[in-house]
Amino acid sequence: MVFRQIIQHWLSSRVRQTVHRQVRQAAAEGIARQREAFEDAAGDPPACDVGLVFALEIEAGGFIDLLDRAVVVRGNALTVRRGTLHGRRVVVVASGAGLAQARRATEALIDAHRPRWIISAGFAGGLAPELRRHDLVLANVLVGGDGRRAALDMRVDPATLAQGVHVGPLLTVEQIVRRPEEKRSLGERFGALAVDTETAAVADACRERRVPMLAVRILTDAVDETLPADVQHLTDQTSLAGQLGAALGTVWRRPKSVKDLWALKETALIGSDRLAKFLAGMIERLAQS
Image (cartoon, rainbow, N blue to C red; front, side, top):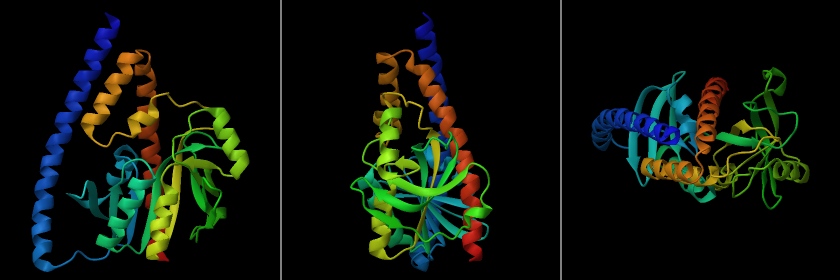
């Protein structure tokens, strides 16, 4: 009986969220159609100052909330948001999880909006014991799963960074790393502070098109924390229906996962907001450089 009540409550909450999202989406699409009609008459949109590539909407949500005059454009299986921040033109794309999706989204962003800078941003797992959940990693070196390393041209003085912000290598692998023993092993092997599943692909696209980039990640899990078993399946879903189906399947197979999913969502929302504030400060500094 208790399990049934939990499912009913969770489903009703998801339905309300879906309705609200669809109302906002319909309004945003109306604005986007008006803007697209104007741009068709006026020519290509102007080059943007900064393009940001996130994997998931929940990663980007906190930053999107900070944008002024945000407009939504959908096409080629991507959702793009254009707006301004600190007087600078900013474009945000949620690529979907994984290397191939991140590369495709980055290429489309560069080709369509010609950004002066690209920032790869989102969540990551901690690989070093000194980093805690919701700490930030500003990458100065990108490390691939094959061990290749590439330095980044940082425009931030590490001495000016706040507590909980770390500068160091960021590792990219193909699958989410869930278990502490796996994270410790990767940290020792590659000397990286954190691990994600997209940044190396963003960097490859930027290098080929000669666009400078930065990478910023916020930790959703420290090195000694274990992620839920179904997190990879959940993040692989690109549509709302897919995410809902994956979550329902997880809860059905493992009723206790309701608590895990709720905790993961809360961690993600806090991380998205903190990441957004840091990115806003970075963009302000980039605008002054």
